Amino acid sequence: MTKNTADETKKTYTKQTYTKQGAAGSTAREGARVMGTVLVTSGTGKTGRRVTERLTALGVPVRAGSRAGSRAGGVPFDWQDESGWAAALDGTEAAYVAYYPDLAVPGAAGAMAAFGRVAAASGLRRVVLLSGRGEPQAAVAEEALRGACGEVELTVVRSAFFAQNFSEGALLDSVLGGELVFPAGSAAEPFLDIDDLADVVVAALTGDGHAGAVYELTGPRSLTFEEAAAELGRAAGRPVRYVPVSGPAYAEVLEGFGVSGPEAGFLAELFATLLDGHNSATTDDVKRVLGREAKEFTAFTREAARDGAWHG
Image 1 (cartoon, rainbow, N blue to C red):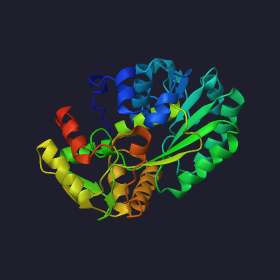
Image 2: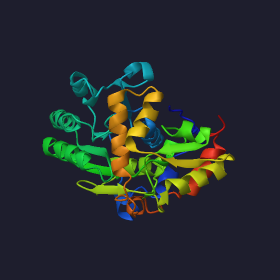
Image 3: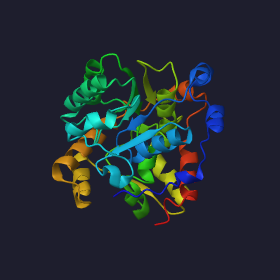
């Protein structure tokens, strides 16, 4: 269901240009420094690989963790196998934590508490945690990590729905097929470009002034899925219409793509819960951290189309 199409190698993030864009406002820019080694969990994922690329461009040593480990050019890291965490963290100064599949799943809080204990024992200085916006169970997992990591500086980044879910994620096939089937009803969502998320994460990892912060990241404008489908269609050059469905119906769609029954049911229920309107408001946290506006959804669609996201 996924297809990584964005060509991040076309974008150059040198130390000079990154500083000009604004790592975290003038104060944080003045205090920013190149850090020691950073562990990026889920380093081959949509957010992890972007964070890895940006840190590498800044000259920061990175360990990209994944279940494939050295076969993927990184280090072994599996959220289901705590035995390898200490080795992955050994000698690192900071970590970007992206829990798979989601902080709201059963067991996530326990995993966060365990990771926090290992991080504290390893002497880690800083953690940036990816979380979900408006997810009560994710907030429980956040607190579990906060309570276990002791003196480790923790920054939480709560994200709105990724815009890239339409171009390299679970909804790509729906866009290509012309029917965006999803359990969102008429609720509006301030879709967030993952490039903005990655920039905020890197700013929090490499700059000072973010310890204890909780950032809620959104795009600058909220759209219904019907409105998003229309914009996607214009950019892709093909008709795309939104087809609202119930949570159970969407679970059946996911199972048709090979997702297991329990996971499909969880994801469908999660989406239906998150997209009930309570996350519709936008925030200015991207601008607060980076000193610039978040990327518009229209700009995302044009860039994705230019990079060939919907040529399939």
